[in-house]
Image (cartoon, rainbow, N blue to C red):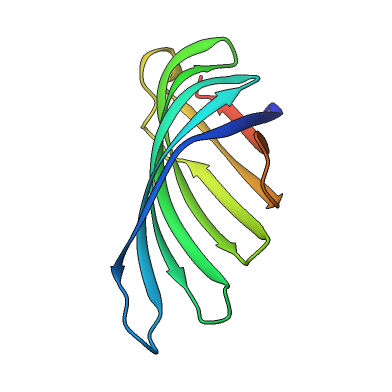
Length: 133
């Protein structure tokens, strides 16, 4: 399976609490739009559910549909995310959900990760992928 580093930028981030009370964990839902460059080119829509602890650490799960081109093929696919964060960093491990590839990306499978620190205009992520024969 080829492994590539792609870069993404945050085009929109809209996070709102859906359960928040004094002395309790804060739970939020975040609707995001990302733009990808590199071996993966395109745009995505992502929904995260996030949990914040009192110490500023937290965790999240999410699903993201990416529409664009990967490895010279066009279509769309869905990533499923699971990660953690603190006040200065984010780690995320994700998989390409099986049977979500459309168009020329039908049969796509794979996984990836990212580890971010601080704020930037673009962020790197590692993606390993293959197409079913």
